[in-house]
Length: 329
Image 1 (cartoon, rainbow, N blue to C red):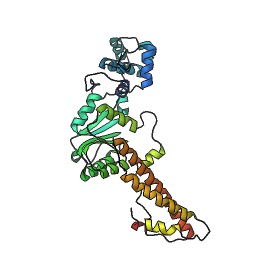
Image 2: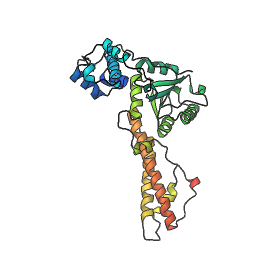
Image 3: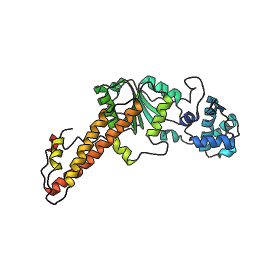
Image 4: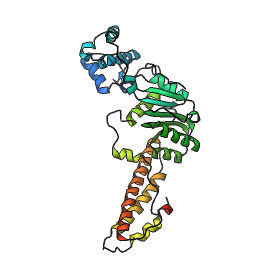
């Protein structure tokens, strides 16, 4: 299907008003900047809830988008904050024409699922993301896909075939963030997706929340992703040494009076046990499941690093190792 353009922000799904976090996601203006524009320049005057939270109307959001466009064009906020919307548009119209370079810099998204694309379009703005292409389902994806920052898919059931198709799509698109909305999935499938760095969210998901997840996962909040975070998103190698071999190392005398193989074997035995424990730990809700999956990923990567070091120690001391292809998981 051809690329889909995103209209301006729509009214909230409940017909109410936007909170400041949603306004920030829609406009691309950081929350502190919105507050400064409000307090210092009275650029907008949001209503207040019974709990004294800011509530912005669609007119407020449209005005903030207009102000951002004017400021991005080179005007100081202090000189334009009190202008009427019509005056702001006149300022923009008097600017010399220049090629529109900014849209190409917006995050691009490939969306699988027309209803998902429609919901995102109703909740997003041109400052949030640009939908590069929309497809009915994973099976309709062509062999060659355009590159995109986000790959967003809505799948009723996460079957083995669907996960394989999703993996092929990720190889073709090379997205920074992949998010899957699902209705039914096995626990094992969700763990597999988590290991591969795919964010899986149980449907239905509010489109504004989905956009925020994308922004945070991509490091759009300025925090970025640490090396540890990137490591946790990569699958760990299968287990190299089984329990029987590790048990035989615990009491093995060293040729150089060094007990490192013994201690490493003991550490790996306990770490492997915790790895399996975190995999089967009970979860009360989705937040519990997420933290347990991260514990499993962390334990797996720690185990992989220690196994590599143990292999070097065994080679150094001339201790025979099992065939690596025969190690049990």
